[in-house]
Amino acid sequence: MVIKRLKLKKLNNTRDLGGLPTSDGLEIKRGKLIRSGKLSDLPACTIAALKKIGVTTVIDLRISTERQQHPDTQIDGINYFWLPVLCTSTPGVTSDSSMRHTMLKESRRIKDEFGTADNYMIETYRSILFNEQPQQELKKFLRIVIEEEGTVLWHCTSGKDRGGICAMLVEALLGADEETIISDYLVSRKFWRKQYSLNRFVLAIAPVSLKLKKILFGFMRTKREYLETVINDMKARYGGIAEYCKQVLEVTDKDIITLKKKYLV
Image 1 (cartoon, rainbow, N blue to C red):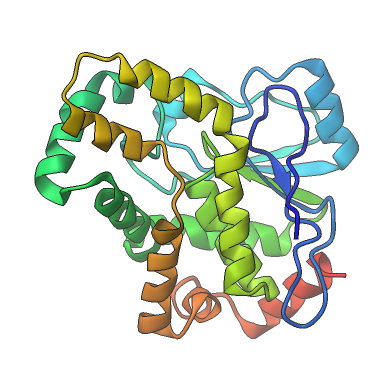
Image 2 (tube, rainbow, N blue to C red):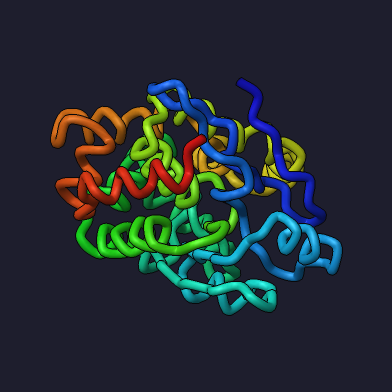
């Protein structure tokens, strides 16, 4: 299974879920479900390409400061929804100017409270899936995917964490197995390789201790254990990802049938 990036100018981590296989021998339709990083300052060629793909709905998962500093490029004929799955700036996940100014301070706190960036990122993923406020936004997200016609695109800033969690939920409801879900999640490492290398270079010459650099490096990663841990949590608590969606996010069996009719081929 090869997952390819949609080659759109200024969009480094945008991909179509189309072609991902499901356990019943079907696959996700192409051009219907798209995940991405931020959609700000898009050139005319990218706008034209998104129109050609048929995008009709955009879901922005970012916090308000991210949206204010890098607003979505508005495209005629597209319905926009704002569903912030986090309330405040969160190191390693959100990206705004206030976060950049406080990153060093936060890295010290995270070292004291969590020990490693990996522990911190796992707890952040857990907070999105198991805290009440983010769950309300995830409910709305799935309802839009179930009910909207056309092509749905959802995005955060980098497209790896919040966007990846939402992709996991949709893929599981459509019948993708765990390894397929994790493979799609990990592709962000490949698509963000150039930016990651640049960030590492800048951080390498920053005047901070090696211990703090390790924390800051950790914020940039996309690691299997982040998603795998919360998947195992959902298995232990609810029996699996789809069961979590049914018990916590109020997805019904009828909704799942609707999803499969709309998005599988």
